[in-house]
Image 1 (cartoon, helix red, strand yellow):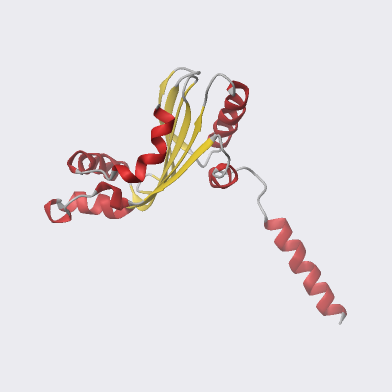
Image 2 (image 1 turned 60 degrees about the vertical axis):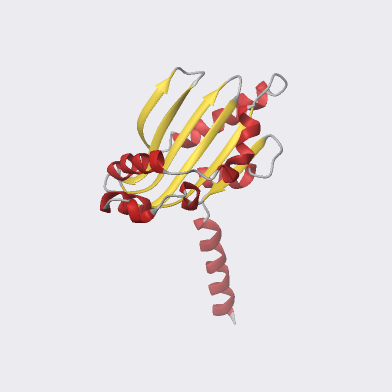
Length: 178
């Protein structure tokens, strides 16, 4: 009986101890996706609406490495600038985690964009694009996949140019651009 209680107590402690309370981008998406200030969108590869028979082997490989895209956008206006700054600071803090390796940064401190990734150079699990502008708000885009690499992303860009993007999947983002 004592051994059973001890085992249950030990299991409970290990379970509680293994929970990571540090903020992650995934937690941030989950916590904010239902809030009225945010626009949340999950996009599948079908958005590209591309004829796979016309793709090269490299383009097919790049497309197959892409699983989905999660987009979370905060629409800023004159009435919510303090909240915009708070939320933007949270995202920047999450992206400072060493697991997010920055590829490039564009723009100044107030307006700009960055591209980061999670994984190794030849096995990228996630690309993160963070763009913000004080007048419009910000957007965080997570491109998720398996065995992605920078070449695949560049090749995927060429596939994007050939695609007939299904704008219906992007409809919720239109209110951010207005």
